[in-house]
Length: 213
Image (cartoon, rainbow, N blue to C red; front, side, top):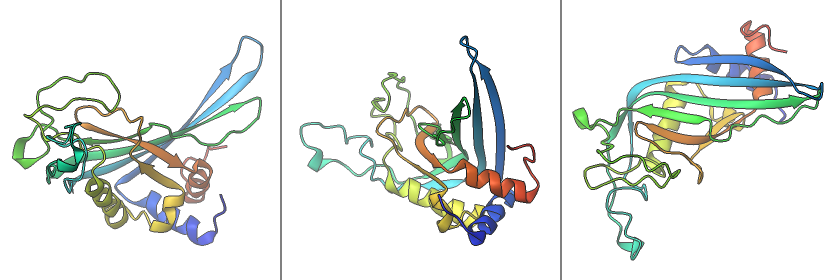
């Protein structure tokens, strides 16, 4: 993906933000046939520590699972969800010097307080069925945050206003709800879209991660 000096300066500003931490590591693999592979891992850990509001649009809100008539679904919980942090990761698998694209897959997670205390989100007492997004949420809970448009919009606003993630940089670091998302208590799962090469370039210009190859 093409980027210019302006993008790099914006990227460096984001990496310099006190709420943002970037980790990079490499695993070198040697296979039984004598070939070698090199897996690169890039991880953003972003501190939130604030309430991120939902707007009640999640299809997984309590009362919205009536398969006979979705048109009559109820509005979900509108709450300020106390979020601890956001983790966004991607990996590039390189075999015999054949470089592949960075893959985020299901490697995004936002960690939140699901206890229901102090007006925050209530995950309820039901147990995880282990069926990806089809985690039933009973009448004693607020449902799933998954698919709530307001939550991601307000999380985006936090990243822009409190972490210096400029809108132009979303081409190099983005996340979204996934149909394959593995929702669980206290965690909202995302797909991650990341251009690791861009962030490694910015990090090296800043003098961090100097061993990045």
